[in-house]
Length: 52
Image 1 (tube, rainbow, N blue to C red):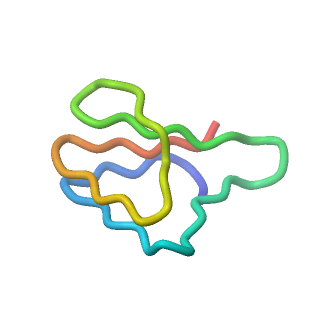
Image 2: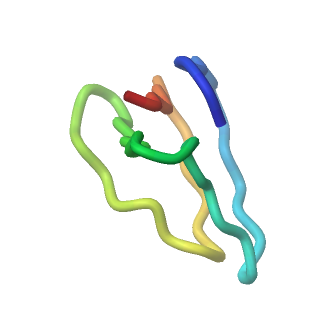
Image 3: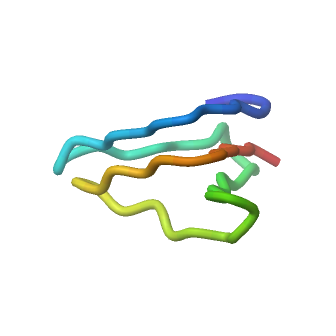
C-alpha cells in the first residue's frame, strides 16, 4: 500500500498481509489508537492506514 487510507471498516482474511513499499512501514489506528494489524481480524470505527 502507498499513502494514507481512511476507512470505516476493514476486514482481513486469515491469510492477508498489508505490505508497504520497500523502506516504508504500515501503521493502523482505530479511533485514534495504534492497533496491531492481525490477519483474520475485523476493525470498525475511524480507521487510518498509513504507509510512511
